[in-house]
Image (tube, rainbow, N blue to C red; front, side):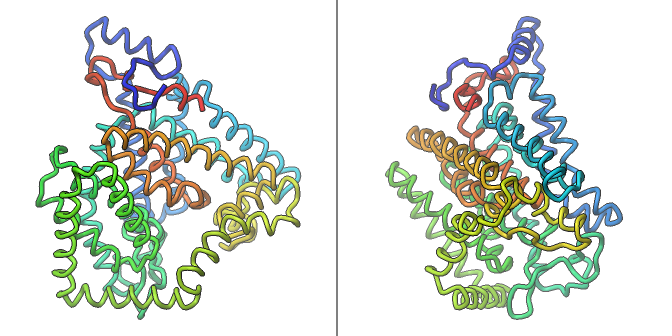
Length: 470
């Protein structure tokens, strides 16, 4: 069954089908999935504002707030499982088995700290299944609502980034986790720092604007989604400003990949060529206009200096591809000879794990994600987790490409972001983990086209059993 097929295949499980049937039979318009839908929205909002809670609002609770999304994730998993949303899903089953086994091997054969083991295993057991909960509950209309929210939020987020860029690290707006007055920014260039905006670390800024870029490009291509042109222009300006003010090469790469995906999509749908020309002209005009502003020129100079300095250090594009990308993938295996069969213990490669084990934050295993997985769980279990991630990404990519063939750009543009982060972004850091889960879930959920009003048959939105069952 094609994931884009609007057939009446329900999410696996009797409970969901029975609730939908009873709702229609009694004429009740309430959506039985609405509570799960609200839960996913709350998870997403907490992902964006978790850092703000830990820095500005409740700095004294910074440590427990690190796990603020975990209880919600557990509830979503249990509620989804009761509705049959995870039945027969081999991805979830394998991850659960690996995570459970890794707990025992970490305690008895590895670092021996049960708290560190549980913290590491929660990634596989609690957060990973959320991808499929999002897929079963959300559809394209829900993702468009998410996109509208992101477009609105892009503007104040860019303004905050500008304030952080020009403010000293001792300023309130730049406070670190727990109200740290030494600042939460990360060294950038020319004595300017990379601002974390509302996140705990600067990586969140790049991930946020990278996801926003997907929706901004989509709404330019598809004006039927009731995004006002003035709002879209303001959000586009905010996106352009975020690149130099973030001093983030990752964000530049992310936006560039999304733009490339736009061109690939248009090459299959030539009727959109005129819109791409208009978008290009508008963006160029915006960039030229921003370039006349002194505050933008300063940020551009700092960003250019960082790019040039990094290129000199890493040897240009070849050095970046060979040294950072390929080494992150292949280096995990070339340096695995001395790693124990069951690894050093799950959770040891995380910041929380290193703090609990040594009293300070440091890389105890590897900085790269694949190296961390193999170092924590050993060659066999680590490779299984890597394979699961690559296999799931492949299925998401195929589903998105099928929708592109039907002229639907949204899954394809979201895939551009999934491509950059899902296979290799670190799951050891809560913000990066949250974005991996959310973006993968949003991408595959956007392939589901609502065939009937949600108030009459809430669960019948073309759930592909082959995808859910892996």
